[in-house]
Image (tube, rainbow, N blue to C red; front, side, top):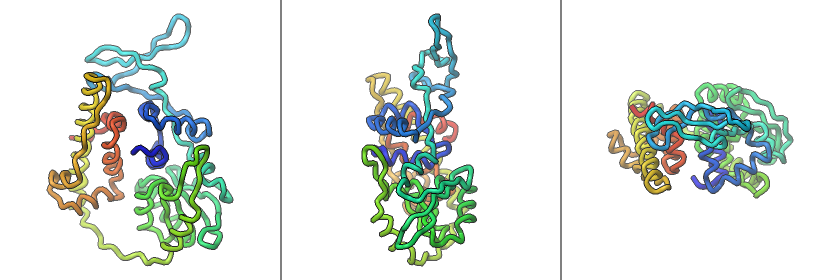
Amino acid sequence: MDDPLKRLLTRWELQPPRFDAYDFRRPQAEFLYQLIDAGVLVPSTPVGTWDCADCGSVCRLIYVDQPGGGQHSFAACPRCGPMEVRSENLKRYEIDSQRLLESIFHSYRLSIERLNPIGLWRVGRHNIGERSREVYFSRGSDGGLMSTVCDVLGSHGKSCVFTPTRGSALKLSEELNCVVLGLEDVLDWAGNGFQLDDDAINGRFDSLENVPKPAKPKPKRSTRAAAIEALRRELNAHIVAAADHAFDTEARTGTPVLLPKPTQAELAARINVSAPTLSRCMEDRSAPELRILWDAADDVYEVLKWRKLAVKNSG
């Protein structure tokens, strides 16, 4: 995932939508600094623990006052001993959703209102598909949020709903009669601001609005749930192995090396399901973490960041 705009939109799906020191070590960090200057990224709660670079243990942070003022922070590793952690590595920044919506939809008639504490917003109105329409924004695929979105927008068949990514747009469009668009497909970064592709939005609206949605057979949830759980264990185990490999190569060479992830065909064989079943598991809206883990496995710094959670969930 090398596109900084796609990284921003993907992170916006998470709760909280946050960036940390790993993100600012990438070549695309300049884009994040521009968002800080624009007020889209705001300081968040600093990191509370630190993973030891040598053994991967989760360490308690301690702070030591300096004679001339200020503090130094140390990770207290029970195996390797204390190691100093630079203060800038503890900083985290969170997406200010209202400010980001204002920046993206600056050409719309805005009346931004938060309708749900997790992530449903009324954006305002705009001329789309040759008529003035209500515009909404929804992020994430939490079950409670999806229910709220359906309750609020179930009778708004002529409105337009945006989500951060194409995947969440596809999931939400299965539940709503109105057109749902992923910003991933219609948004660009122009170097100093966001730019919506109005032609693409109008074209998608015209092509999708009147297409009847076919009735889908209900999936066999018990079988699917078992496959999802097996796939979750496999992906978490790979994240742990990949992180350990990255720590080892960084210790030996100074550069962390990414362990290649298994193909979906290999994963399907490991959990004894067909390739189409595995694909449906990946897209199941009850298990959004599968897609997150799958994408994270392509980036060595994402692997390092997700290791601690993966250890807990790989058993």
